Amino acid sequence: MIGRLNHVAIAVPDLAAASAQYANTLGAKVGAPQDEPDHGVTVVFIELPNTKIELLYPLGDDSPINGFLEKNPSGGIHHMCFEVEDIIAARDKLKADGARILGNGEPKIGAHGKPVLFLHPKDFNGTLIELEQV
Amino acid sequence: MIGRLNHVAIAVPDLAAASAQYANTLGAKVGAPQDEPDHGVTVVFIELPNTKIELLYPLGDDSPINGFLEKNPSGGIHHMCFEVEDIIAARDKLKADGARILGNGEPKIGAHGKPVLFLHPKDFNGTLIELEQV
Image 1 (cartoon, helix red, strand yellow):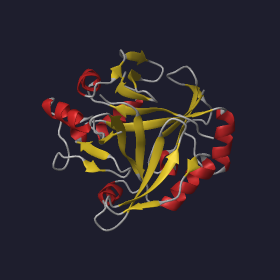
Image 2 (cartoon, rainbow over the protein chains, first blue to last red):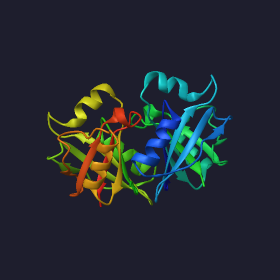
Image 3 (tube, helix red, strand yellow):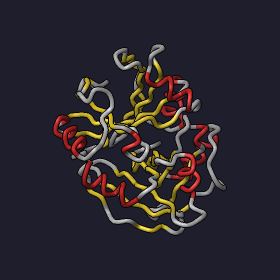
Image 4 (cartoon, helix red, strand yellow):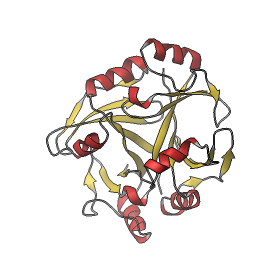
């Protein structure tokens, strides 16, 4: 079912510092910050040859990243995203196997303009998994 | 400097259950467990089309994963590994930029038989980064 690793998302406490570090110290290809008001985040994409890193920074008081940064003030890996061909089929298979889908169980349009779902970390070894239909 | 994302490593409290979940529920290509006594871990590789997931489980009382699982009993993302062409040049650049290398600062031979280094998580947004020379 799961295909490519689309990205690894890292919540960071200082987006400019983290971007500069990936660009200068780690020598990666770092994009410009993009506000995603529907998702409560500002995102910086780092293009690696085979996948992406997404730096996440809170946008607004209701950002889903605020709580994570309160618990992890230095930042940390927030989630990883796997690509799927059919997100409804993936969801139904996961539910049939007893995995919990976050939210109301319906795909939302994610930061890349494609349908996404998030799976409950407690069902997946403490990791927050995003599925994105490609 | 950094190239491909070689793998994302996930520490898991039950290696058989996690392997079965990735194989059956997530439909991924999951390998057999491999003991790595020099690193204190048993590893299961999950092959994705563009990168790998490594499930890590403690091997022995001195395993570096024991402490992580005590703090995160459900498991969690332990580190991510970027490929570099020249690990000594990478290390020297990182040190010149003020980043801390874990251990004695000399590359060790990692689980894939190639030289690796780990960078201090506090210097990299709370994420443990492994560099592997390929």
